[in-house]
Image 1 (cartoon, rainbow, N blue to C red):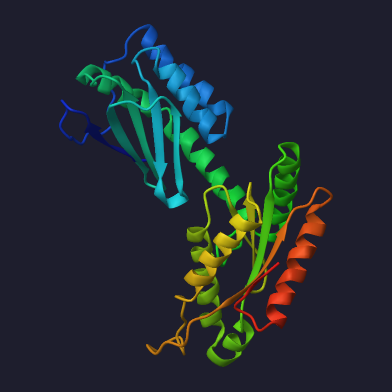
Image 2: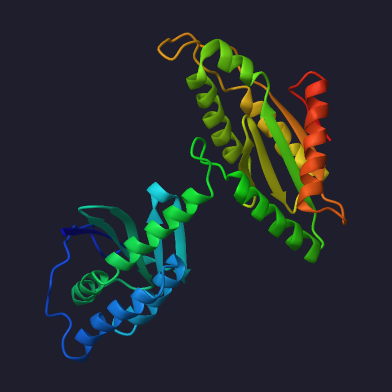
Length: 306
């Protein structure tokens, strides 16, 4: 298997350079044992953050490091372990099967050439455990995601809502639920085809993610229906997010035919809002949000009803 590693150095004294992992004599004697130890230790977990922490702890015994920053744009991962400092060297990890993202080492002073050689040699032990951790993460994500929109699926909605209700009650915090659907999506499907209806759903899911906060969660409940769990959010805060969604959804259009350039009018969404009470279960909270959504539809759609 071909393994390619590109490195970019970012510090006040270092200039950018590209290098490949090579076997060097930077490690010798007892330090060569570290590579073997790393290989064994890193095989003990498939948890990404624990994997990075174990790697950081072991490598720091020969090259002082303050922290690690890991980026993987394809999987939407941006995570840091320990302290983030001024100087850094970043390695893009690529095999002939996968692009594994970028590992960035951080510390308060610049890296020497010898230290970089040590890091590059030790980094080779991370590649296969990292690939396995990423594959597991992708498999888990697939099991809990709606394949069309990338939003959480109904199974994940139920699990997440139960957990959020438990946390809200334990910490005496508000919790709100938005249930929404596209007005007239079935008619759009019938008149302009399935492709257009699916494009609208994908665009709406992306719009919901952009309108939400990092602490909120977006799910596709069924058909054209979506659910947002708004943690630590009261009724007033939920209305702010709902109005944001209402405005953003009006910018979504679909093509009249799959191969046509002509666009049709903007869509609108109906939204039902429910705020958790002290006696709510996941089922009762979803039921109240569904009733509110029905009320919004009965009043003509393009409304927020609670």
